[in-house]
Length: 297
Image 1 (cartoon, rainbow, N blue to C red):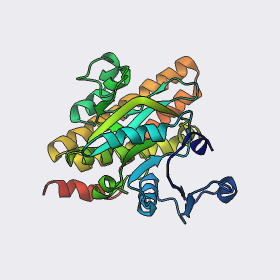
Image 2: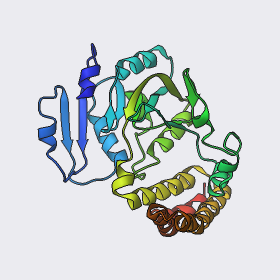
Image 3: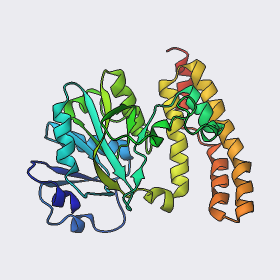
Image 4: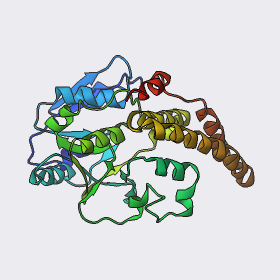
């Protein structure tokens, strides 16, 4: 509703992907919305595949990947589009994301590297929060007020030229949930593209629905996505240490969060300890074969 309310003087189409939802009546919810095409999948094959499906049905020159939990408070689409049109070359553009109370939401990130994997899993980023060397989240603490090239913008709102998305083959559908935009931005920048954080306009991203309703789903697929990214983009001599740091971090977090839960009498922290324990047994399908394939790359 807010999309139509704030998006003015612009020709656009809305392509809605229903990933085999079981709650509510989608057709009833979208009744009366103009220029909307509904695609109902028979199964939930993940965020990446759903976006790829939508992109294939898009007819415009420009493509906006947009989550369904966004609230418009200004004409962010037109402002972002005008900025993208002003750029010559290959660009992804993402605006600032806001929480429901209007506060800043983390929307940019740096690519994983072996150094960052070590720092994140051994808590070094907490010891040195403002250190760019240790902290892959360094950009989160900078109050960026002008357009800035970054590694990753969150996939909740990502605008691009459709041809640039198609040249990459879209999202890698092996990423079921989480990590898709990291992989996409990584491949895009390797191809000569640039990713721009554009804070001159913004949009509210509600977020958190999955983590609140299905916390293990979040923990499981976050772990899987991290390993998939390491496996796909790290050479073997970095991939093996990255796995060691990853699982060492999980083992370290189990007693830490267990102790904190007992000190604070907080069952949510206790569940975190349990989920980290379960993550030890998470390893993406077909990755064992991939480890052997890495030797030939």
